Amino acid sequence: MESRVSNRHRARPGPYCIDQEKFMKVGFIGLGAMGAPMARHVHARGLLAAVGNRSQHKADALAAELGVRAARSADNFADCDIVVLCVSLDADVLENVAALAGVLKRNALVIDHSTTAVETARRAAAQLAAQGIAFVDAPVSGGVEGARNGRLSVMVGGEADVLERARPVLESYAGRIAHMGAVGAGQATKAVNQVLVAGINEAVCEGLALAEKLGLDAEQLLPTLMAGAAGNWFLEKRGATMLRSEFTPGFKCAHMLKDLRIVQGIARNAGVYVSVTQQALADYAELIERGFGEADTSALIELKRRG
Figure 1 (cartoon, rainbow, N blue to C red):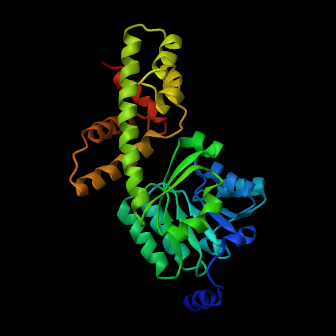
Figure 2: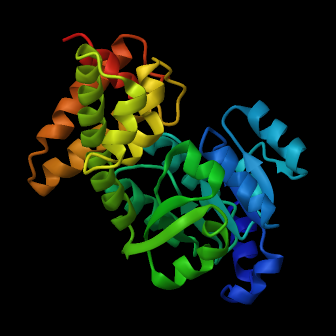
Figure 3: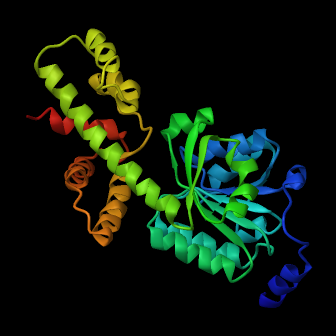
């Protein structure tokens, strides 16, 4: 196996050229609420060759829908120039990277859209670099709506020339692509993003729980708040549904708790006290204990309603 991989690496042609986009083959691993619509955008651009998922039936279904290959192992991505990861946990990223490092061609590229620790991104990059494979950490923000609409904000850590190679893929589902620095900088930016998201969620849910207790008319309240300094994405997208106790997930409570634990570690290493994050950690842990793990983060209003 090692010999075959080594020979394939030596046979690989020179560095990728942007003009070769029309010949590019892209694989996509992780077909959840975010990953599946992102993979569809890559397919719409004519680049998708293979899809994979831990639950094989999801890969089989999407592959049949789009007319691409359903991967059953890392070997099924061996001919891909770029492989995109959009998985849940740091361990999932490292497991996939280890498998891909053994089969991808030299000068291939792995784009990781998962939310992980900074050190996980650096470990993944180092393991792939040892095989001549490039890597960028590129976590995203914008929720399921952003993924479906192709308007995600992508925060990229890695070399500038590697980012340029990734652009044809990223542009298929991004509203904004920002190069934040070296490998790990994308994940550092996502940590900051999640601090803000958690704080906004806390404030909006608390405010709307108060509004309910005061008997305010939601149809008048929400547009009035949105027209002023209190306006924000979470209030606009989730305000009406949370007041109706509808918590169809755009971003799950369980995923928020996972992300906030990553933020907690990053903040601790940076020597920053994040009191809002600490409160959000406690709240989302309680929500999960109460059975809201698969619900949207706007289910936080259930805690605020208790008084």
